[in-house]
Length: 306
Image (cartoon, rainbow, N blue to C red; front, side, top):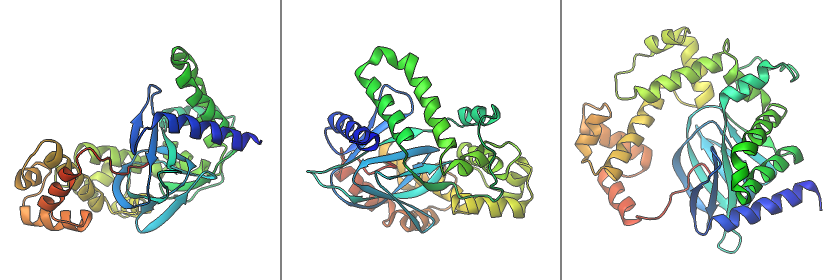
């Protein structure tokens, strides 16, 4: 049996034993999560953080800006920014569930590894999209298998997990997705500036957005900022802000039982009717009907990035 297949088998066994039913599971290892899906599912709205998503059994697809990114046990998904997307389960069954893991990227660690200078220079000058599909290698899979194996040895996690996590970041910087990750960590690059703008938007989504002011904040012209923002996220800055507002409003209505108007005003809308129209466009149904459906499915976990 090859390293690839033995590592996949070990990961599938470990993930399967720790995911008793459909859902997303957090773990004692920081930044690592497992997921299980038992049937194919239509695309569901989600926000993907900078991370790598592995499938060890089954197949999934991420939709960003109308483009599909399918991935399975031979291809991993990587995102270098916080990206609004739709996650879809393509292949899964109760007998052969779709199993996998998510691993949050540490952009500071990536920057530190790049600064050490032990990696070959990248020739990529173009701004790449913030999401891509990479080839799973034996080295990457083996590192993940060793990280997951630490769950059997909890006392070793604080000592050994950081070492293996560092190795995973190193291997990603040696992978075919290195350019995508490097552009976000390069402080003189456009990708880094867009990431800073996204950080600001996430904290200030409820205030009126003036694109020229946000561009100036990250030291870019408005035209350049708008172009690169759309290239990386498949959205304009205003669309991104709207996505953040609508998802926060959904959370407020579902978890804090706020009514439609209260939630709309809280996230920055001045018109509840405009809010309802834009909400219906994103989620496919008006807010009240969406809440009724979500509460009716209480206890069922929607597919997230995993």
